Figure 1 (cartoon, rainbow, N blue to C red):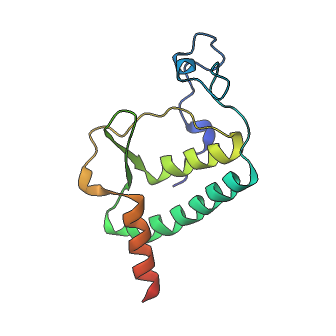
Figure 2: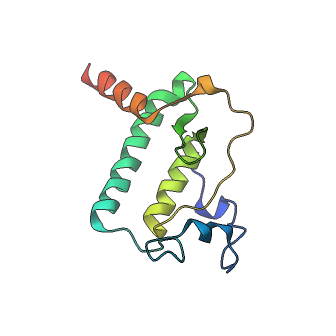
Length: 128
């Protein structure tokens, strides 16, 4: 199941000059970087979308729901279902940024694996 971009929750601070994310700053120190992706960045996102499709095809039938990421900012793990991650990457490709999103409610950590695990599993499976 693919989640359409329009189905993602709207950014509650879109267009708000008091957006708390502005405190994070961008290259000019005033606002987050809304510059479009350069060619190399676009190529990376396209490659990630291709990898994601392979990872999901191999791992979803085994009960894996998505990818877990260790967040450097908050020192917590973030769980991304396949559809949410695909929609976020597609939005990054289309708009150059990702909207904030709601994490899964009470995720089962055993149902999520790291991107590196996905890559290793895919490499081993496809090498057979």
